[in-house]
Length: 160
Image 1 (cartoon, one colour):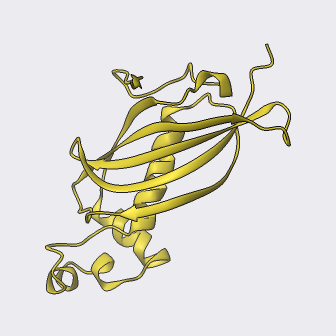
Image 2 (cartoon, one colour):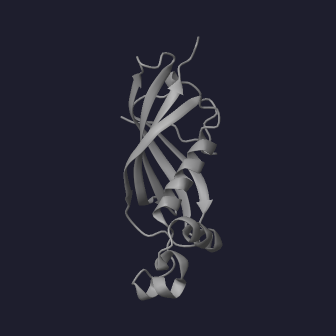
């Protein structure tokens, strides 16, 4: 059974401490419109494939139009997650796993995120912190999943 924590704004300021997150919680948040110029600028710096830089090249390769770089989509998830949990006392993220780009993302697409808390564990090696494992989906125009990634947060425990 999921404890769906969807809010009207997709922002969860009350989620501050490790103890505020429980396995099975699902959060939906974010609204990011993919901008053609931003897609090209990102790809120019970090992922200069022709299908990320040139509309005609993308079409010639069968993509139907210019597509966003996968790392840009992952970075957008990170931005959306920070905005959704502005008060979370995160310490660090030791990494991301299982990043998958399932469908192309085009200019004009609107991306949002869905995150499920998959695991929580107090950290014996880091007193005062807990580990939270998240399973994340990036969705286009509401609910079409275009990318998935797993992430881990170290979050401070509530001193009370």
